[in-house]
Length: 227
Image (cartoon, rainbow, N blue to C red; front, side, top):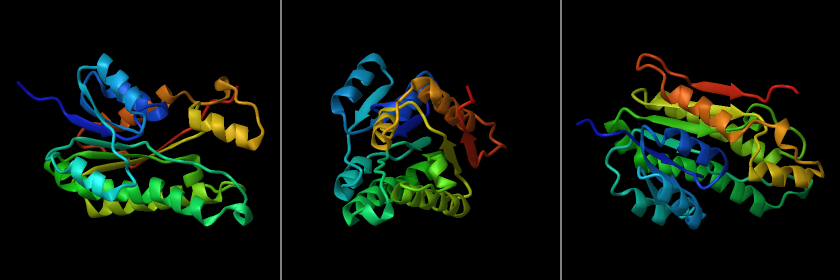
C-alpha cells in the first residue's frame, strides 16, 4: 500500500491557508500550522488526515524542535503572513521588523530546516506571495518590501535546489480576515464579491502542485475578474 504524501501548511487556521488545507485533504496527510490552536483542532477533528502543528514561526528554537522529527515532506506551503499599512514616514521600526520577521525570515528558516525532508521526497514548496510582491503602492511599503524579498527568496531557492519544485503564487485581493482589516485601515468598505475567494487561490496552488512530473510552475498570478 502506497503511503499518502504529506503537506505542511502554515497559516492553516483561516483564509488561504485553510482553503489550501481543505483542497489537499483528500489526497495528502496534513500538518496544520497556525496560531489559532482551537481552529486547527476543529479542522483536524473533521479531517482524519490532518494534525495540528501550532508553532510560533518567529521562535527559531520552537521551529527547530517542531521540525526535528520530520524526515520526509512532499509539500510545504507558506501561507502565514502579516500586513500593516501606512506611509513610510509613519511606519515605525517595530512594524518593519515584525513584517520582515514573519513574512521573510520565518519562511527562510522553516524552509532551511525542512530542506533535508523536502529533498528526500523531491518535494514542492509553494510561497503565497501577493500582487504587492510585483508592484509597490503608496502605504504598502513595508508589506511590499517583504513580498519583494519573498519573491527573491523563492527565485534563489529554485536555483539552488533544482530537485525541488518552487512556486510563487501572486493573488490579487482575496476575501480573507486580513483583507477585511486592510480595507478598514484604508477606510473602505469590504465587499466579498469584489475579491477572489480563498478557494480560488487554493485551486491555483493545487494546479501547481498537481502539474505532471516533467512540468514546473515557477510563478502563478491570480486576479479577481472585473464585475
